[in-house]
Length: 262
Ligand SMILES: Nc1ncnc2c1ncn2[C@@H]1O[C@H](COP(=O)(O)OP(=O)(O)O)[C@@H](O)[C@H]1O
Ligand SMILES: [Mg+2]
Image 1 (spheres, rainbow, N blue to C red):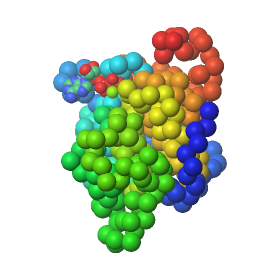
Image 2: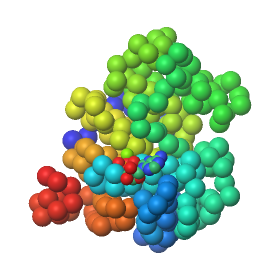
Image 3: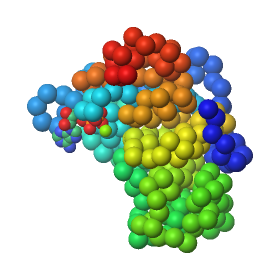
């Protein structure tokens, strides 16, 4: 199932250890998190740890709270209670921008690229806040093209001319060129052809396994997410109802049927 990306493993990542021991500190930890908009909480006392270099698939029906959890982790939504820790540090007082500076990146729902700007300009934007020097920025943009070869062919095209798949590649590349340590993705496969989904998943897996990127991947496309994930976490009504190795979850019809609807 490994997708061929033609990309050297060293093209992304952080230099963090790729294969930490079981005692390694979680890259991302959520402790007793409660989040709500109005009324009852949407996330209710959720606890979760993601180890460095691990890919965790965040699964669950529409409305389970996946997007709310990701937006809380990136700082866009403030929790009512509980803590979010990045490399052991409490992020309560850390702004969205400072979380990004500390290596927490998000690819939100909906292939967010700047449609008026070209592919190249979008990649430059991804690198701009991180790299003050022009040479470093050029190297970062080149990493984006190494990740997704179709983007190199489209470098001068404005975002609005891209296909859905190319847009999602660009959204992911724009996040990865700044070499985040933890990447949050919200339903990147939505509406995309299986071949494109496989390519996106392959890039994520290479980044995690090759260079220690930590990934929390919210997906309705359970099969694709579990094909690259180390672990699957199923949310229901804002709480974790299953936390199991991805292979077990994929192979167990009772688990799949009870929690994932197939
Ligand atoms: N901005 C919002 N204001 C009020 N309620 C919201 C908002 N966003 C999501 N919700 C509600 O929170 C619950 C969880 O939604 P969401 O986090 O989007 O779940 P998922 O991503 O798993 O589909 C749903 O009941 C949804 O209606
Ligand atoms: Mg969602």
